[in-house]
Image (cartoon, rainbow, N blue to C red):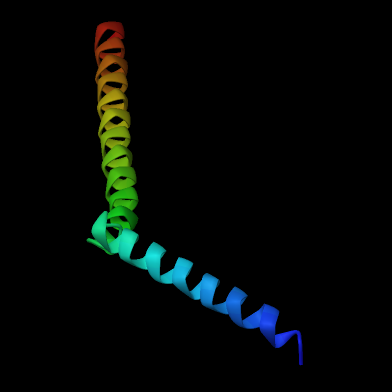
Amino acid sequence: MSIIYILIPIAVLLTAIGIYLFFWAVKTEQFDDLEKQGLSILFEESEQNNQNENANSEEITIKSKATQNDHDKQR
């Protein structure tokens, strides 16, 4: 029974800390726009991939044109 005298103040203290942290998070806008950060990773990666694919396709086009020019010169 004497353990309750220890557990109740600990429970009240942990509850007060949890409530304080919740209001701090709301005040500092931690819960605003939860999906933006998760989606920004996807969009940033896809944009980089598109740029890399465009650069690769340009390199292939340049190489194929150079190869065609070499073949034309040999004829």
